[in-house]
Every structure is written in structure tokens, then in C-alpha cells.
Amino acid sequence: MRIDAKTQRGQAVSIIVDGAPAQAFLGESVAGALLASGRRAWRTTPQGEARGMRACQTLVADGMVISSRPPTADS
Image (cartoon, rainbow, N blue to C red):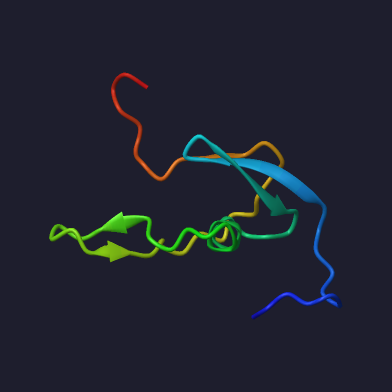
């Protein structure tokens, strides 16, 4: 669905995605915010083929930090 001038969105908030700043809107899901930011592939198959994000309906919050990689022992 495309956003047009008649669409009312929530307040703009700042999030961090894999260390990079991004904009999202209150009431928007993490999945929606990530797709809107241009991310299309979040994981790969064992063969290296790109795959989309699994369903994430968590709502964004101002200052939210999102990492697409699992934590490592030194992080």
C-alpha cells in the first residue's frame, strides 16, 4: 500500500537499525519500518540466498535499537 497525502501517520521517531539511524512512525510495526527504510533481505539460506524478515509485529518506540544479527560473546 502506498502512503498518500490523506494518510495520517503517527509521530515521527528515531530508531537505530544495525548501527545506522532511521526514521519510523509511532504505531508502525518494526517490520513495516524496516521495509519502509529499504531493507528487503535480513537473512540468508545455508546456500546464501537472500530471505525476508520473519514476521515482526512489535511496534516501534523512539530510540529503539534493532539488530539483525544475534549478539556475540564480545558484544
